Image (cartoon, rainbow, N blue to C red):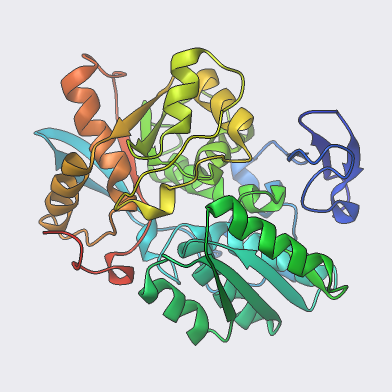
Length: 371
């Protein structure tokens, strides 16, 4: 789309978005996207209740949208540890997770460019989202997933018609297998939620919605689960579109896999890969997130921080959310657990309203591992 470019965060290579691949061809680093970054609330589409109401700051036009009605999820009042909070219910999106936001934009973009098949690597939610939107677009989808992925999530991708290939090994080995498959098929694109810059442009809409739902202002703080970082980096992109003051962004990772927490503790400019341990928060078990540099910049630029969550606290938080009628999967409860942990260990939090993003439905994993 005219006016949208990408720049390599490492070597500075510049490319037009429509001619760019999923990473920099010179050095292999991730792209940073630039385009129509200023949102004029007076130019929103009042009758459009999906994320496409923000067309003016999206790299795909509404005319090219592959949509299942994603966006405008409820923002409801709740309580955690005796404190009032707002819950953003992104687990109510069409395929059951916040990944629908990025999937809608990315599938729309690649479909517009003429690709007939998308190759995806995912531990579950992104596979389901991208498979669902490929089905809506009438194009093929090949999912590469870790062999340990939740069977229910893979069943959902298969139900949409996706071909699923299980890969033994690390998350990075799964991505490499998907990249090789896409490279051998000229009609296919590697549609990575962890790499492609267009995916971020979809995920940023959760915070644009919160701004509207709070009457034209941002909350003081947002607590959100972080694995590959699209929700976090998307939040930073949303802040670029509107005037402040801006929220502190607090990233929540499982203690079993917390590269952001370690990098912040070291004062590093980028993350260093960690050796992940088993965790119920399987959606955040990404040991070497490609967008690590952007994620750290988003946290530091907002005055936020990162929390590493032990399994016992995560399980207890999942139960607390369920008992408020919020049936989420364990990964989705990381932000809520981080809020509870911060109340106990950090002292005073930013003064004002707090938003906690609930990212994935419990219907994907059920109660089988919560005892």
